[in-house]
Length: 251
Image 1 (cartoon, one colour):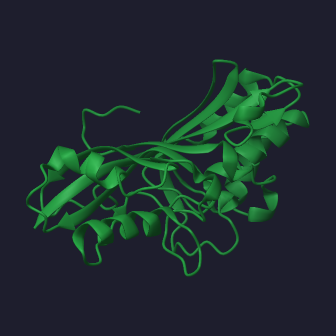
Image 2 (image 1 turned 180 degrees about the horizontal axis):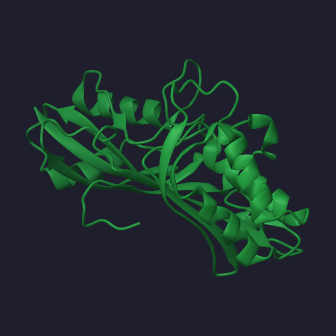
Image 3 (image 1 turned 45 degrees about the vertical axis):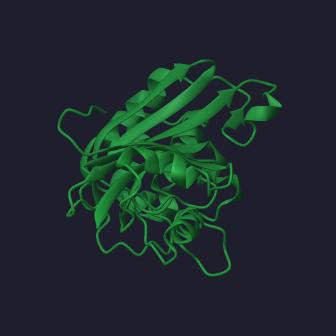
């Protein structure tokens, strides 16, 4: 048995998230169906992050055990893709140590959220960003975002029903920047709570638009009360960009 690591990209628009659910189309479910067809028996795929319904990925990571010895590890990419629909692709595959677990071995996950500021958005991008009519104060956005860096209790940004026992997470970086006409919010952390990134984006944008200050945002974070947060930003603007494993990887 070999342990195969895969890097996965998907358009989350028509998926009910990563994790297998009864009577729902999920990324994990579609991958496992493809691998079962290849292997002739069930194969479980472990994922590095459980993206929510409608969330996309460019650098999701997974791993699975295979008893097929006729395919070189790097060729699993093309072999699996031949069984997959076009809204999910394997970008790379390699053999890893038997103990490797894509979720437990991950040191950090990086997410990006895309915002288009302007009166008219391009139709082909409507499923991959949100549109706002104004251009916000980037200095104020970053003054707020920087307050999230460090090990903190993120109860304020956890969706109601979040099943995590601890709401403490370590954020390594949190920044807004502009790129190709978009405002991008990038955050790297050891792990995330349910809908945490979308809640952060929605809260910061609403607060900045209402004339709020970084001090106001600090009070929201430290209040540890979900009722203090703003709206949860739509899933369509969020991408799982990369999963960090090695010390040489960067945020």
